[in-house]
Length: 69
Image (cartoon, rainbow, N blue to C red; front, side, top):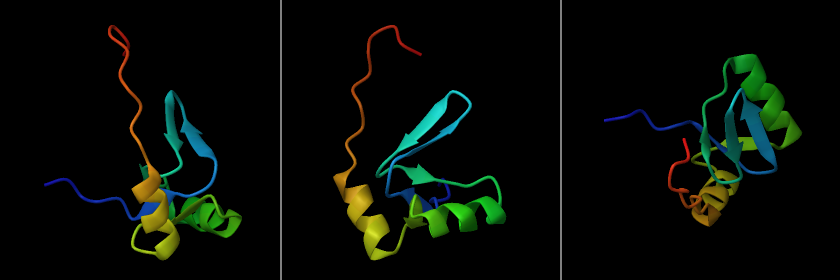
């Protein structure tokens, strides 16, 4: 079973290379320092917090476009 992410994006989005994490998506920061900075900025919250649960509940996965990678 896959490990569940500790954080959820609660405001805005985060881009790492080609991957973009939007509000409500689970997010695993690259380091503890980066996690602390994003939590302080209000961009992410702990997945088990009220804000994290609310954001995750509002997330709707985008529809896949045929032929898109």
